[in-house]
Amino acid sequence: MGDNGSRRRKTDRVNLEPHPMPRIALYAVLVCVLTTVAAVLSFVNGSFLGVVWLLMAGVSSNMAYFYWRKARMDREAAGERPRDA
Image 1 (cartoon, rainbow, N blue to C red):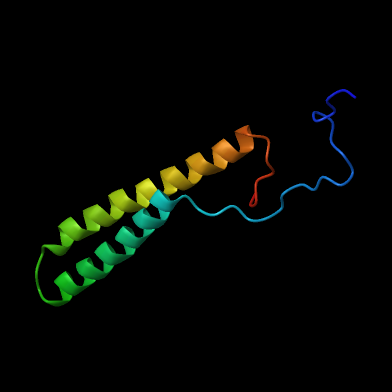
Image 2 (cartoon, rainbow, N blue to C red; image 1 turned 90 degrees about the vertical axis):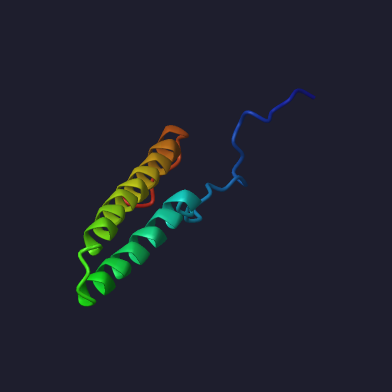
């Protein structure tokens, strides 16, 4: 009549569903794409303001990579199997 909750049972399944990318990383990827499009349009129109847009694209891509990597390391630290190697 004791608590046997700490033991794994054969009916327990390992969660193999894919983990979603962190929402902040998705927003950073979206910003990266939009700033890249804005940079291209600026250069096509003859404006050198596209340089600023390219710098913003660089920062947002670094943010996306950082948050994606952080989520992956958090999952590994929690003992879950990483999806991609």
